Image 1: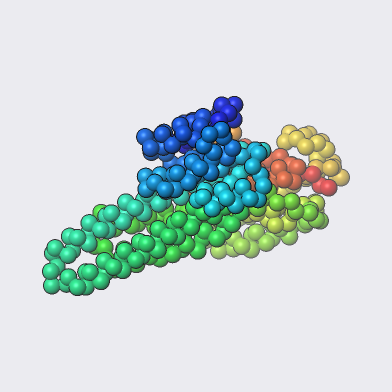
Image 2 (image 1 turned 135 degrees about the vertical axis):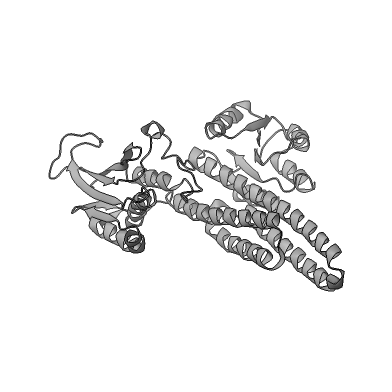
Length: 402
């Protein structure tokens, strides 16, 4: 449950609608005093807090939360349309908030941040539960191995020290803003390393092993999420377009996928493409995501066949019938013979964090196609897909040439 705190009800309702569209439950408080009462009564996973409110302002609410053991670990995002000065932002982070967003805010970006901090909060709760299990395991060993009491005591100290480091790293993760999300990777690697050490050296019971393995899988997914979020956030930066040879871009992408293409015995057919004005790095990411999906979502026992082709058209339209030699737009198709999907879900596949497939069978974060759409949008283009479940998919883009 997410708590939205704002003294203006008209500011709360749009936020609740955005969260509802992404399946996130929310509650509201119209003052700092009401927010503190609700936080003490209900277990909230995240608080979106306005800065300037009559009576108790957002900073005072944050300071009260930070001073209570029951509320100090709840992540708080400040959201303000008025207090945009550096001193307010600095004070927001000093009080312990995980982020400070000024209005107007991109709904996609807000949802991305909300879901990221919710996942971080869940990770911390999982670590606490694992810590409890480890403590119980240590107590059992001490009772069963009296002759090894000194050694167990030493190991207990080591485990407590490592748990303190893990909690410190996790707290640091909550403090980083989205613009430095790549810095989250280093403490995440340490979480994996220490957890593996705990699993390999100190844990023998099946239940504890299962919890440890779940934690490691969660950490691996989190690493993928951080990388994809960083790629997604970079798309908001203004980059000067330049003359870009799509043939060279495709060649680089296929070189990167050499091993996977050989492993799956895939066939990739690329027609001679053209040169357009664009951002090479972003276009490379676009084709990497689409071709990577074609290789990933292939049918069992059926070698992937991927076809990339393009031609000039007169209008920025998926069904433009006019194919002209020097048209102002270039239509590109990436087609495969993979598992496909039901077209009734077409409106979902380009939304961030949406995935139509079982993530136990296919690794992914649900961001790849959202990145593809963001890149086409940044290039003033459009993207869609056609698919038949069990037969394959075709992704179609229309990009301006100049």
